[in-house]
Image: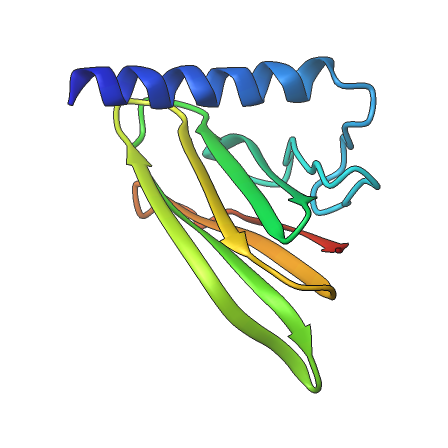
Length: 140
């Protein structure tokens, strides 16, 4: 269990560091970039950073997201993948994660997809104080 927490913490740290040094990062919340990365929400009081990444490897959607709280708060989050259909979005898959004591929550998942437009959404809960969300839309 301790090893699993360490791996998740390491993954979250890699995502955060990658987001900070990436030249394609948006400093504005909810502004998706062409490469699928969206991060650094400044509109939240208890959330320092939130991000999602959606990429495709053939018929596999590779999904990841993270939430970094601004203090020693507990974080729970759900990462959900949707496919665009007429007239809206069809739910495909979701993954959950949590962290405590101010550690970031990092979630990774994969799903089988076909051609089309997909949306990846992360929704969080920061100690019942706020509920950050971020999303990215990409076409396979």
